[in-house]
Every structure is written in structure tokens, then in C-alpha cells.
Length: 456
Image 1: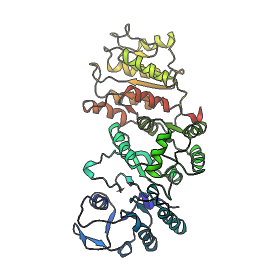
Image 2 (image 1 turned 120 degrees about the vertical axis):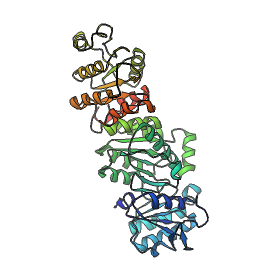
Image 3 (image 1 turned 45 degrees about the vertical axis):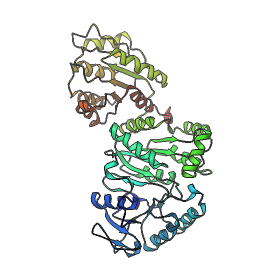
């Protein structure tokens, strides 16, 4: 089934716009796509008329152009007839924003949609969802532009059963500098489900990492998903809700999904080497790290370098707690590293791992230490705790250290406090595809996920 009309539509019909309520979901979707995206956008309401000077068509079949994507935002009982009209008119795909289907006990109404889609081989997303956001292409989220926080275009795709969780993840992605290729809210996932999106995104040239927020699977659906995800050529990350009996009940009322036995599901993910995120923060960290290093797998042996002994100690505790090793460097390695340091810290720096260059270190000391660590066989990743307020470093240090990584290929994860004052330093890393965490714990999570189960 071709899902490209959903993600790259040349034309969009928004069905259900209101002549009197500018905040109606259909109106929000219509306005933002008409004014801000390169997609021909048409308004549809059975009453016809005009909206902001644009023609309102009485039906999708009345639109004088081929429609790639129809967004349906009307009362649930009207949706089957509208979907039938879309199929009859040759529309390429649909997103059903409307709620009031299986999640409200109307399984019969939802089944009508499924039967029509199967018969016509017609792809639709939802119902009870936000739909799709593709940076620079299309946005069917019924959220006002001024309320949305949109991350930059990037290479992480997110598929979520919850629209709210998805929007919250986008906020976190924007804060952490993680770019998004596709974001999909699938709601009740009556027809298109996780597996179809996984197949599409694996082949999508804009996507390098695929993340899922899952509430539940139908019978045998989880097995098929895991089987495909195991063979996927791109990293797949799963965040699962409904881990407790109470959480399972909440999931059922949200999207009519059966949460299933979480312990079994989690165990199966681990057995098949699929990455599970325990929390939203885990998911964001994993996405950022894997978008920079999608093909790299380490053995979890970490070298830690900082200008603060305290930061190094906290990082080592976190690494060990996460199952990572921080092996001490032998005397020969320490001797070599020490001779490359500036004279003012040569005798006071601690070089056993973690490395504490002290607050007197200058920029070249960090470069020399990382350069040496890239040659040490006992470690396969470097955790850099960058304190941007040290007097001996400049805003260029991120770019300089990233060049060391690019020369040697040993993965580097940096911690830098995320405030605007340090933005230039952070960009030095990000522009060179080095992940930058806003906390030590997040940096450790990024380092941890590089030791993926798949090839352990």
C-alpha cells in the first residue's frame, strides 16, 4: 500500500470546516496548511460558501483537482459516508481526526471504516487522532500555530497512539535539538497500524531512527511488529504504556487498546534486540544519540573526561548503574596523556578514568585528552562533561572536539548545560553530528543506548 500521499501530499482537502468557529479543529488545520505549507489546500462543508476568501466546496468530489489527502473532522456518525465519498472521488488517502468510535464503544461504526478501506485498498489514519506532521510539507494537528513547539527538520520519525504524548515529545525534541522527519498520531489505529508505518519508514530516505509510543496491540499484532522490527535496518525504539493493571485500564479507555502483559512484551523486545525506552526522557535521549550514530554499536566501555572531579564521579556512578564499564587507564596511557597536557595542569590532573583536567585546563588540554582517548583500545566511547564556564575554553571547543571525533570515528557524547548563553558551543557539536545532552544522566543514557542489545 502506498503511504506517500499521507506524508507528501500535493493537495489537501479539509472536511468539516466551520463558517462560524475559527477555532474548530478543521478550521485550524485548513488555515495553517493554506498559509504556511506548500500544499494546495481546499475547504469542504456541505453548506458550501467561502472561508477567508477561499471557496468552501460542498463535498470532496466537487473539488476541481485531484486530492492526495483528505482530513476528516466531523461528527463520528457522518464519517462513513464522507469516507465513501473520498474513495469514490479517487482521493489518495485520509486522516480521520474525529473521535467517538471504538474508544466510545462504537465498534460497529469503526468497523464500517475498516471494511471500506480494505475493499478499496484505501489508506487512512485514525480515527481519534491528530494525524501527521512533516516539517515543511504538511501539518494536520489541530493545534494553533502559536501554541505548537515544532522541532527542526531532522531524521527521527515518531509514531504515537497518543496525540498528547506525541506533541509533548515534539516539545522535548525541540528543547534538546532533536530533528524530526515525520510525526504520526495514529489514535485508534483502525486500519493503518504500527507495522505499516514501520515498513514505510524503513524505506523512507528522510528517516534514520524510528520511535514508537505504543499503548497496546491486537491479537498476534505485537508478534508481527517485533518480528519486523528485529530485521529493520534502522534503529527502532519503543516506549510502552499500560505497564500496570491500572495503566492498562487507562489505555483501554483512551484508544480502546488492550495493553497486554507488559513483562512479556518487554522481555520479547529484549530477546529480539529492540530498544525499549522506560520513560519519555529515555526516548528523547535514545533518539538523539542514535540519529547521530545509527549504525554504530559499542561494547559499553566508556572513557569519561571533565574539568570537574565531581562531575566525573557523578558520571561514573551513573555509568555503572546503567551497566556500563569505566575501565581505569594504565600507567603507560596516563604517562602519554600527561605529556601532551599544558604545563600548568600536567602534575595536578587526574588521568585514571574518569579524567579530571581540573578547572585550570585550557582548550588544548581537552583536545589532547580526547585525542589520546580515541587511541585507547580499552574504551569504545567517550563521555565528555563540558563545563562552558571554565576560563580556559572558548565557544569553539565543541567544533574542535567534534573534529577529533570525525578524524578517529570513536563516538563522542557531550554534556553541556542547555541555556542560550552556551548555544554557540552546543552548535559546534550539533553541526558535526555529536549528540549533546542537557544533563549528565541524559548523556549516560545516550552512551548506554549505543551498546544496543541487537549485536551484544
